[in-house]
Length: 241
Image 1 (cartoon, rainbow, N blue to C red):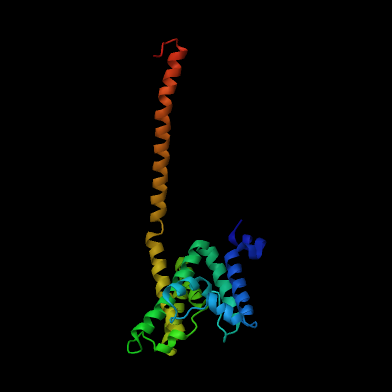
Image 2 (spheres, rainbow, N blue to C red):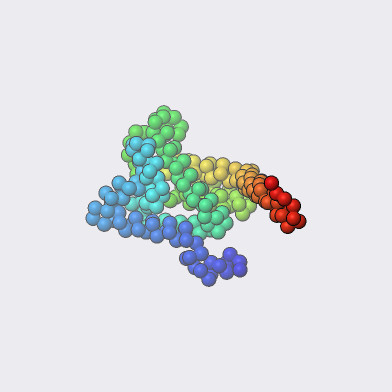
């Protein structure tokens, strides 16, 4: 059965990660527009550079699924479902999560560094940016698009995404635009690392597993050999002291 056949037959169950991510975004969008909901979402999933680092790190996994208040949620839902579904099929669920969270975290840390170095630097931000709500799946979507294109050898698509993100950062040099560039850089580093070292650790683990199996078999054989010899002597009528 091909991937296409599996998706057609199982539908949403074929891409559970994409379905779960889309559901969480829809859920947070509904909750944060309820009375008292925005305060609840702010306490569990909203990241700001002004927050303590450990608190930001704890909130980052959920911040990926908290959509912006001033943007239509249907856009985020469509982007996340399509890109996460393709990534889940092309990259696998584990790599999809690694790329999404690593690039989101890279953007979060970049915001803190930018506020710390101040507006006098090229990549710095004024102090008020520390209180800007820094959430949403856009950095993860951009990063996954880069990794998908890299894996599929779709160089034109990868170049187009990079050009669009750099252009966005130049035309609109705000926090979101620069975080997208950071996500692109992080995704490229991950994609290159996987290409270069992707099969290294599996080979090492396979070698360790084979060595362990051989060692275990040798140990068992060494333990059984004296018993077999003793049994053979007994059957031959030999006296065993």
